[in-house]
Image (spheres, rainbow, N blue to C red):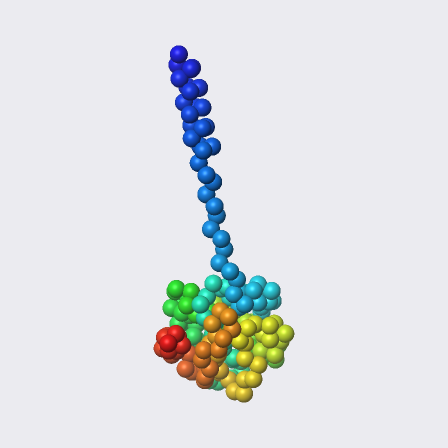
Length: 169
């Protein structure tokens, strides 16, 4: 009798389990133009930007530029706050003469963000990446579709929160 009850319990569990409908996996969010471009871009030193960020800040900078050397450590310090809610991802547009110099510059400041050479095909493939920088440091903020929201001097990067709120209006 105990064996019969055991088999009935197993059959009942099997029937209940098979009657349940499978749980569908959540569909992935549609990839934005920026996310698609990031996935296919070779960044300096292999660090890729977060493809889920709401906004992207391009910082045109170089190791030989005095004002850039003032902006970069401040931006490194602010970066965790910028990415706390996946708000703003930073991409360095290096105006250095070689990728090696750009890598040294990033390493000097322990910069956690991705980088591409300013005049490279990789930079040109990123939606909203500025192609007409006339002075550095310079920042351009775009949304995930590449629409420019802000453009200005690199020392103004600290205004990112204000500029993001203003762009939403």
